[in-house]
Length: 123
Figure 1 (cartoon, helix red, strand yellow):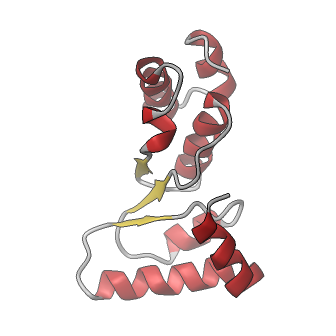
Figure 2 (cartoon, rainbow, N blue to C red; figure 1 turned 180 degrees about the vertical axis):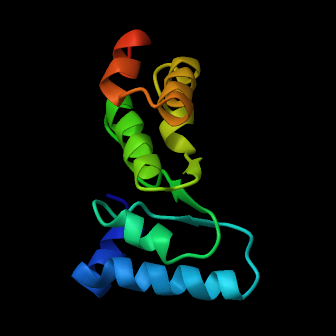
C-alpha cells in the first residue's frame, strides 16, 4: 500500500469511498473529462456510480506479482472502471510485453486473471 493510500485510510477510514466519491464529483463539476483515482476495494463501484464522468483506476503502489496486477485490473473493470492507468506495475514487471498482453485479455476479453497469467507464463 502506498503512502498516499495509507494517509487516506488514516484520515477517512471506512468513509474513504464517500470522500473519494465526493472529491471525484467536485472535480467533474470543475470540468474534468475523466478521473483517475485509487481502487478502493469491494465498494469501488459506489465511487464509479457517483461520478458523472469516466473513472480510471491508478496502479498506485508496486504490487508483488503480475497476478496481483491482473487481479486489480479485473476487479476495477468488473466494478465499472472505464480502464486502468498503471505505470510502475507494468514498467517494472519482469516481462512488460507479456503483462500488457495479459492485461489486454483481462480488460477487453473478460479473461480471468489466473487464466491470463497462465497463458502468458506470469506469476
